[in-house]
Amino acid sequence: MKTYDVLKLAILNLSRRWTRTILTMIGVVIGTAAIILMVSVGLTQMKQTEEAISDIQLNRIEVYEKEGTNATPLNNMAVTAMAELENVTQVVPLRRLTVYAEVGKYHASYLQLVAVPAEALAKLYTPTKGSLINPESVTPQVVVGAGAATQFVQSEEDYTYDYSGPAVDWFSQTVDVWLGGGEETEDTDLPASRRYKFSVVGYDEDQENYDIYISMETAERMLRENIKLANAMHMDLNAYDTVYVYTDSMEDVDEVLSTIKLYGLDGYSNAEWIKEMKKQQEAQQTQLFLVGFISLLVSAVGIANTIMTGVLERKREIGVMKVIGMPVKQISLLYLFEAGALALAGGILGVIAAHLFAYLIQSGSGGNILGAYAASGTKLVMPFWLDAGAVAVALMIGVLAGFFPSRMVAKVHPMAAIRG
Image (cartoon, rainbow, N blue to C red; front, side, top):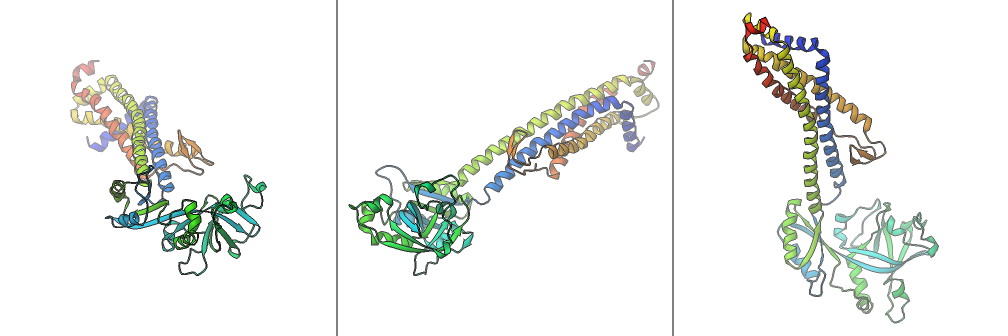
């Protein structure tokens, strides 16, 4: 008998006992679908994480001073030292100035200006309207975020939850700025600040952007021209609030950050928590796969039970096949084929069931998918390799489950089996 004939006979035997076959197959369907759905949830979470961090600069280190009286100052000397480190491509110092500002009839009592070297601003920020600061401009320029614009009010009554800022064309306005906040400006014991007129060249419509950028050169000029006020407000001309250090790649972050800490400074990188988060997701992915795999192992018990019962019930049939000269190997192969057919059919149906179930539970407005958070419109990631892998695992487990029952064929004595 050819192998093809053995396969046809195996399928015929399964169809004769269709009730038992279907019940056994249901276990494989559930196990296969469980593997696909569990792994798919993990893949979906990983995809959401990758999308969330796609705009994050993973090769950037934020450096700041350590707390304490003997801390290393974050000044020009520190910036120069960090720029000379191996695998460092760029160092961008940032300074924050507290100012009082006016735009027409609107004012902001306490506004934070972020001073950055004009040529490095493009590394940090891109406005949705207008342009970045021109370092060669004679007039001081500023780039405004929509969130920061909400700080400009006419009166205290404007400080409401839905206030979106002045209804002005920012590009046609001049922003008048005085060093120091509202209290410092009104304090007669402090030196008066000069007034600076800024032209708005860029605007970001993102309401979450509370930054207002000016050039570092302009900030240093403001401090020099108001040196007495700056000293009274403890604003050091040769000091920075934060320094951004950019490395060649994310792999260089740990080494550069360790060196910076040896200098007596402190730092932080998004790469640190992202690496930790990915480790947690990989561990979760393994756990989810094991949950599905256990379900498939349970179905293997059902397959083994079905094949073993078939061997016991069909001893006379086995005896006849032996008497007419069918090799024991082919008879054993017959039962292996039955186990494999059960597993393969159950695996394929499990793939279909998994995709159908995924379609029914996919998030339309955001929420939980199988216990995991999903953003609005999230669809489960179910690649072809996952479907093929789940079917392959189901087939392998089915064949292994049928191996030992098929070996029982060799122990069946033909004449005893025929006599019953």
